[in-house]
Length: 117
Ligand code: HEC
Picture 1 (cartoon, rainbow, N blue to C red):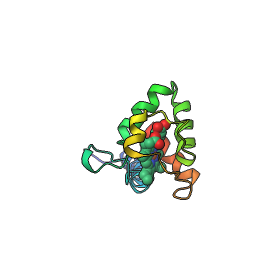
Picture 2: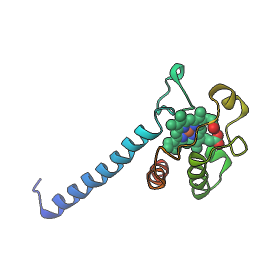
Picture 3: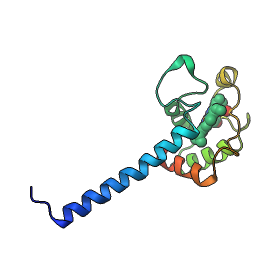
Picture 4: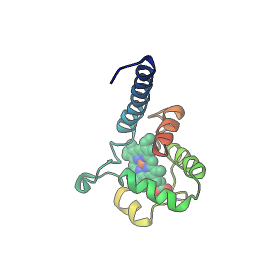
């Protein structure tokens, strides 16, 4: 294939997009995956896995906008009253500690956008 400027430009922007989502993936790794394993390593879990979080939030909040708003609020201000996980989750893991001092609002919004991309 003959490389034209257009293909090079396309390639370049694809790489940049990729780099941007890798950054957020890394951010989520740093800020959430410590407790919410992205995989299924059941034994060492400190919290439900992220796919489980997304699933249960989506069952309670019908639109992505509502779901995103809920997660953003919950991560900063968790409470028993707001929880969508059942009682059993609370018994097993305890309430999620607020992440207010662990990440910025912008970082959290980027993570939540990344969930729903
Ligand atoms: C210190 C451990 C810890 C960290 C770090 C953590 N979580 Fe959690 N999270 C928990 C636990 C435990 C639960 C289950 C109990 C609960 O719902 O509060 C939970 C539950 C949740 C829920 C479901 C809330 C509900 O209504 O039941 C959401 C949404 C969530 N986490 C998002 C996040 C996101 C996004 C991050 C990263 C910015 C994060 N958490 C970081 C421990 C953590």
